[in-house]
Length: 289
Ligand code: MN9
Image (cartoon, rainbow, N blue to C red; front, side, top):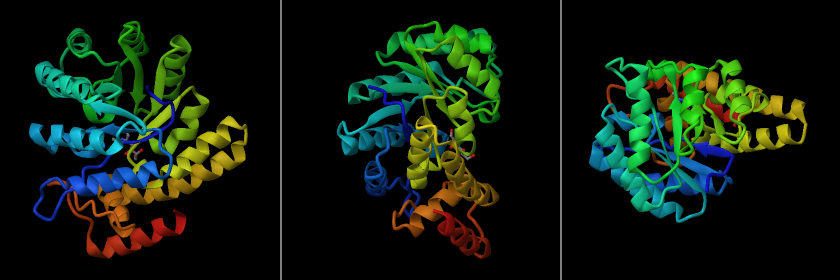
């Protein structure tokens, strides 16, 4: 079952020797379950997925599944440039017992839209799990029109979109044209805008350490307490502005380390935050957490 709430897009913790730290991954999951998240988005952009080997990618999925043990919804991002590889991750997610899969469109080769549409159909024909399209034009280089999205969503196996894009008119059309599909907001800094334009929930990287703000924001919005919801978004955005100034994932990992969850650093070529910047950054964030 896909709960319509707040889903951290899980980071991948690394040890000093650069190998995946599966114990720290379990700690991160427990930390977030205790806060009441609705589920996890696994092996997506935030997980540095394209810098994991396929074995690591599967082991991360397995660790998440075994740690969660049915306590919340699980979506596995299976996106790859090649359809067969994406299908193999999808089949693995199905075997484990994930609730849904998701994928960025195939990128790099400027595939025509027809090939991209075929990619989603192909995966859905081979994997018996609902699919959530991951729209992230700034990273994938693929811009879906509303016509593309409507066409994808006309397939009953495609149950929604994770929309990491700031055109909220398109998001409103996605939901209005397809009221029974699930729309997840992608940019955490505009979640309140997303809620007012039809988002059912949100998947985001900053929820790794501050999901409670967004859980409250959603509840305030649903109660009609817009002032309180705005206050949560403003507080969160002071933190997100600071994150953007040091590198989002590097910053998120620094904050989690400060909170006692040893997620390590990001893989190269991501660069480390300079020591001078790091202290200042952490102090700013801690004041607003
Ligand atoms: O999709 C995330 N997007 C990326 C979710 O990582 C590209 C967001 O959670 C952003 O990291 C966050 C900061 O811009 O909104």
